[in-house]
Length: 188
Image 1: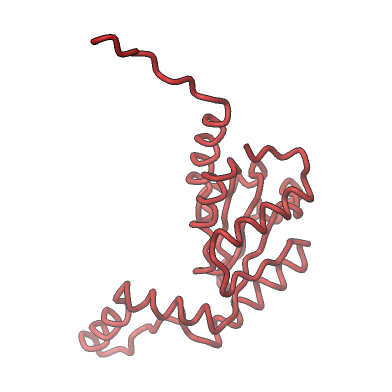
Image 2: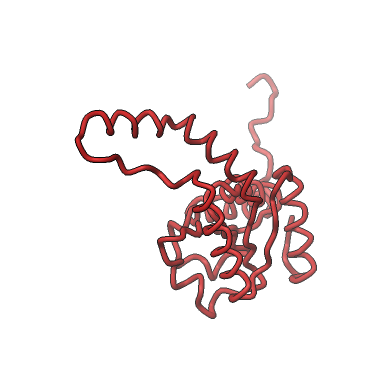
């Protein structure tokens, strides 16, 4: 109308790779689809609250990487697909963090999620002792982190400490690691 072009701009291959990367990353978030691990450009693992999901999304949106992430939970074995030979250990990055920083993040999360209030309410409404969360317990967190580091060492995964690092800094460093290992990986 009125001489305006109704043509849409051409969508580039890069655009479609980015959409594919983001869709893959969302499907493979939080260990949801372990069968996709072998198709990932990079697999992020780590204990809860090390920033796996936001980092995964950033890497997929900015670098077109197909990212999977898997939580490492002390009481739950990792998916067998993660430990299989189909997943190249050079593509697995184990995110670690200092126990003090992890404790601050988790304590804040507990307050935000109102978990303590729910536990206290449960304690007053039943004669049994409540099941307390070990989520922010320092001893438990140290065990979780040690377990993650031992697993990374046993599997030949790269450990990356995110303590005090901005997500963009972490993403940049992981990109450097991947570029060094996989020069043909397309980041555009």
